[in-house]
Structures are given as structure tokens and as C-alpha cells.
Length: 151
Image (tube, rainbow, N blue to C red; front, side, top):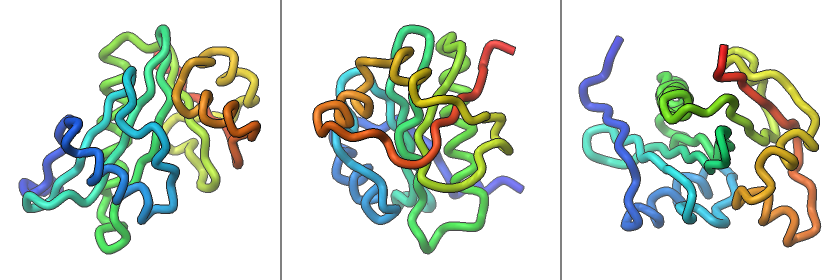
């Protein structure tokens, strides 16, 4: 079922506060949101922002940066639409893989499989998320995932 009231659009620099608000409400980090070398989207329902997602781009790979919908809009497939939109974008730009860090959930239903952290850190050393973790002397928490896009 499609909801004609729902639109996913590219975020502009003017959307930074919206992206950050959605991410904060989902408990996600907002550091380096909309940084150079990234692409973000805002999901709107009825003209109101209710979700956001981002990708940090490397050479032939991207790192998923946040996938969030506001708590009151969860359970209707909006998050899935955001994720599929980002995956399609990464594939269209020619990425061979997309990575992500996750503190919970099983991402295998989206075609992701768990990989060692070193794979992401080696493939995307300049990604804003990776740089932020390095600057703080931290490791990303949770699990590291990869989806092969070249199949």
C-alpha cells in the first residue's frame, strides 16, 4: 500500500535542524550530520518531517548514517522506505557495498551481513562517523554490517 501523503526528498543545508531533531529523538548521534561528502534525505508525511536517513560516501562505498522515524510514526513501514531509498541511491551511484554501525536489530532482512569493524575502518577511513570515533578515541558500539551491492 502506498501513502500518497509520504514524500522522501533530498535534505538541504536548511534541513540540518530537522535531521538532528529526528536523530536525537531516535537516540542517534548528530555529530557531522550533513557534513561534506554526505547525502541526507527527509521523509515527510503530510508536509511534516517525520524521518531522516543519511549516507557518508567513500570511493565506491557508502556508510549508512542514521535511519530514523519519529516514535509516533513507527510501525507503518516508513523506516523501511527510507532504508530502501538509501540503498537504491548507493547502488545507482555505483557503490559496490554499503556499511553501517548498529547498536541493535537484525539488518539481515535488508540484505546486510555482519562484518568485522576493521573492514569498514579500512574501506572508509575518511568517513565523518569513522573520523568522529577516532577523534574521541572510541570504537563504534554494537555491530558492524555490510550489504554487497555488486551482486
